[in-house]
Length: 219
Image 1 (cartoon, rainbow, N blue to C red):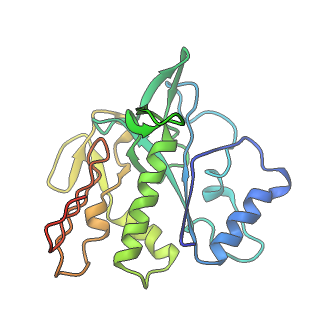
Image 2: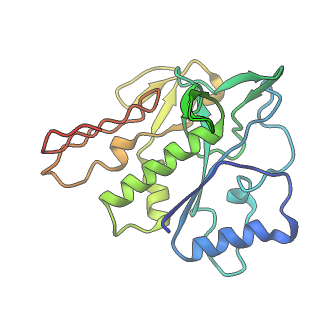
């Protein structure tokens, strides 16, 4: 397995069992993409106790010597204006956690399938994380010789930097908390692929990924 997505968090890790599993995955060359979490206080997204597994990219140390920091990619959520995703669920104001988030992706009003087969809009870092996991898989498919650490770094290095002023290189955000944060850019991450095919992939809002290959197929 090259990419694992974890759209779940917890406030404890009994006997470091989760850390041990993540370190085993890292040692095997797997990139683990995790949701940053959704605090209940929208006005203070940096508060709270440690949450796992996101905090392991800052505090985790592997006894097997694996590089967990660069084999774990923590994902925050944005809205359609590149601002920090905030919402209200059952009367509790929530937002995307920015304490450990290294990269951000759309995470508000994402169309998703329900257990009964119907569709509805989903919100939270749990929906931003698999978008980044998918981008990691696409990047690896285009560059199969990369290591997990190299894919991790490639996604970060090729992300758009959010700015209070829009430029050719940066995307605009009106949210001061998001200035300087990295926004997923799939096209940049996989740009050096087979030139016989034309891929146009970008993290458009509502997760509209279009792939045009040499046969004119569209998915």
